[in-house]
Amino acid sequence: MRRDEPADRLARPRAPGRIVAGVTSDALTYALVTPARNEADNLPRLGTAIAAQTIPPLSWIIVDDHSDDGSLDWAAAFAAQHAYARALAWDGPAGGALSEGRREARDLHAFRFGITSLPVPADVVVKVDADTSFDPDYFERLLAHFAAEPELGIAGGLCLELEDGRWVARSTVATHPRGASRAYRWACVADVMELEPRMGWDGLDEVKVSLRGFRTRQLPDIAFRHHRAEGGRERHRLRARALSGRASWFMGYRPSYLVLRALHRARRDPAALAMVWGYFAEAVRGTPRCADAAVVAAVRERQALQTLLREGLPART
Image 1 (cartoon, rainbow, N blue to C red):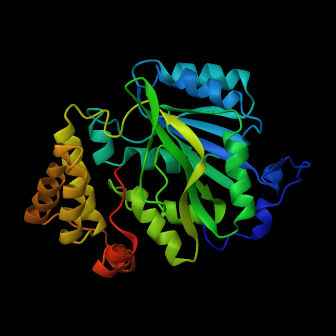
Image 2: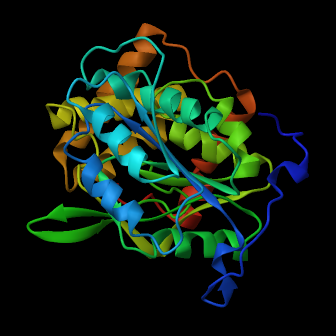
């Protein structure tokens, strides 16, 4: 999978498109990849949401990461009933505790395995986590944005999470689509394949594609439901926030920015202060950071004081 792949590899007959917001939405095609480890409780809900889409995917690759709860069996049964679906067992090494998966970026490994297993390329490839669901026109509207904005490289809908019985929007930086439902234009897939598998990869990919002239953004007019809160597989919020600090170290965050970000979040969640501990613990250990100097420089440029004064601190995530 290379950046210099011939454009005609994507060429395929197009069906007449439906019009969404003045744009022919299904002039583009899409494929889905779902990394899954012990997601037997979530996959049926996701399968129902995908089967109900107004525009079906070219492919849905479900990549099972050594589950022991029957996830792969469910995926195989679904694939037997839906021609676009395929259930695969990731051939990587078996992991330890579920919470270790984020540290090891196992979702990136599984996502890339799914991409290389696609039977044909699609104009847009979407990483869809098993613990999500969405309205029937979600991908139709998503494709409409990619059709209308040729410079759009990575995008995703607004993330909704259940809070006190209500679905509440989780704000984030406008340029940062949540990792639970994250769509890539095919031209940006190569950037994902080059990433070092470390927690924080789904932030560095945005920087890489922006350096090539693409835009990344959250789409506020469409939304998906996230049925497990960020860090939900961590047993303690302090541990989840510390992990976020460790990822920030790898990504090359400025220490001043990291501290300001933690204090900003701590107004609502005191556990956010653990980000500072996680960050500086990695610094003391001398843990290697992202080796791509251009990407790290771009990350730090975004965190410069003049940028913060112009755009403000990122919203709570």
